[in-house]
Image (cartoon, rainbow, N blue to C red; front, side, top):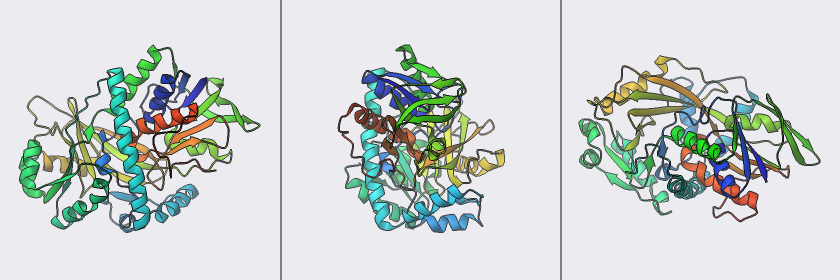
Length: 415
């Protein structure tokens, strides 16, 4: 079967890989000049089943409200005149109860564990190297009360079989020597020994190149305008390169996905959440961390990727806006200097901002739409690197008529 995949980010390219592995002829379309040039370009780089908590939780509404008056909040709300944001926001608030948080955590964690296994399969099968570091991940707490709450919260993941343990400051310094100078500023840490990190952009681009080498086509610099539908089926996609046709279609356009299908009666609850990314060069004289982690007090993530150190922060609800300026990253640089003063070259940063395609629940949307040959694989939010291989395998299973190994409850396409 000929399948047209819309989107060459992590979700689209991994879907193309698993579909091609099933014997389908795949073509991938993207508006950028290369794969992984938007949301997947400079993300946190962490593959973290041990951090599979949804953003929607009982504390989130208070944090968002404070962000209207204080700019240093990890979750930020900016008032923009977009009815879609307010519709999405009401659905998000409905997920901020204790019960919904528990349900969404369980679903998200199961997906993350399954997807990490599939990522390892792809890496082994293809031989792709992407600066993977499989030494676990650290979640740091600066205050004792917050550390105790974090330790209590991890039980739900431990009950699902995810390995997690607590570290005191001395144990933290022994596990990650680059944090030794900062250990007195940390009350404690949670260590997820089976988590990992790696360069998702490098992985995605190498996977795309491999698919091209196998004869599958990638059509870059091509903007998607609309679907053409007849009698409950998609008959083509209008693009800047003309009408493209296939036997089946996969929508993986991240935050742009709901725009494309809204006029067709499909209401995807996906909205962009802006994230900021900072990449610093590592010189021979530097002592960067090798274990990725998150400062839970500020929700700043860090991960080494070859000769660079990546930091990411902030979840900003501000519409379809990726504008940024150097001052937006001052807090991230201060925190990095505080944790590892000699970790990287802080004088030569590279800045980036992207739009994470979030659902209110924090889990993606995977499955067949109301159109017989249109499949949806989108809404991976801030954990696309962790979840993409799992949803790609599940999508390929559905297209082939197989029952997915992964339970897709809560990830269905809205009717």
